[in-house]
Image (cartoon, rainbow, N blue to C red; front, side, top):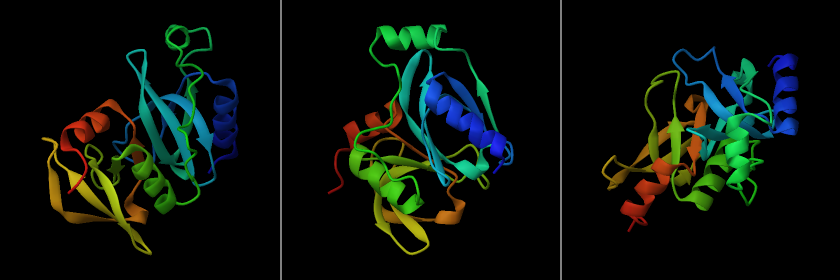
Length: 185
């Protein structure tokens, strides 16, 4: 991890200004627009923002972040719109999530929001798997997935910790899937 990137993450966190987070070492990985709301040496938490509104959070491996670019200051239209609607400054979710270990992060997010999206971008940059964390093993997570029609799949999917590059939660899509899927029976 480049010290310059850590400095930029810290600046983004303290300023509350919108940023674009790049992870160029992961071919095809999305650039994430939003607000840095928490940083640890292991994971960085971003309040995602698109179309002038907040849309959940994404946690990315801090070591994968290669660039943090400003997308405007605290007087740009995005911030002004969010401020007027009472959504700025962007904040980390309550209760706070553990950012030191993927197992804790994913479990905390799943408990708080019901569903998480797991991204394995080095193998499948254009896909994610959405579900609830059903179990944690010493080297992997087990996810009970919800399909795109909001139906629970009965089998558990295994995700080795080393493969997961991003965890999303609290976004409109995850919330809609949970609304229609309901709790797993």
